[in-house]
Image (cartoon, rainbow, N blue to C red):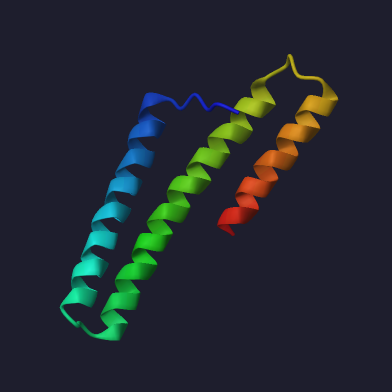
Length: 92
């Protein structure tokens, strides 16, 4: 399954992933510096949310594409739905 993500959606996903990357780097620094556990967990939770949002955005794009693809057979649609559902649940 290949996703064709529109430029504006791609930019949004990439921004979320870059934000998460920066937050994870911050968490690593905080741990290395021996920072307070609560601060570390707060930053880690923020990074996790950014990753989840990027993943959900990608899955939503996949769902839109599957619904728009009129050339699929019902069996193809069912298989794709199952694959996307599995991906969605992996983020839940």
